[in-house]
Length: 117
Image (cartoon, rainbow, N blue to C red):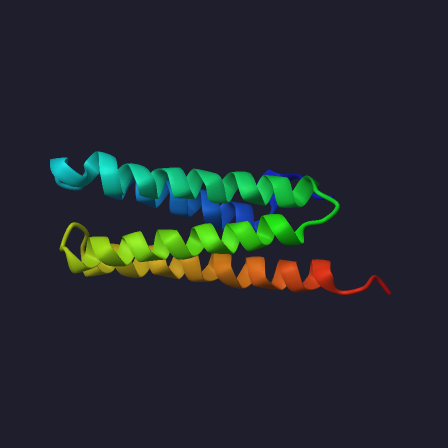
């Protein structure tokens, strides 16, 4: 088992949390706590689920929950872009990160589900 902070998926998830924290800080006051706070919370939960999956014998439930949280995050990011609370460039950067996390989590889940040779 690798140290969690050395995993590529963890590094990307941390980058996403960093970007989202900056985006939420600059959202309009009315939505900073609701949408921005929810985005931050979802990103923190994603990082926690990476840690849990790394430590667990049965990784699949944690990775499934991680992918679900990622979809909620993508939905809120899209809403933020549609409402012009974030720029297109910021949207593109965050979606690039969420796509990377999703691909890595899906691969990790498939790997964890396959029988050990």
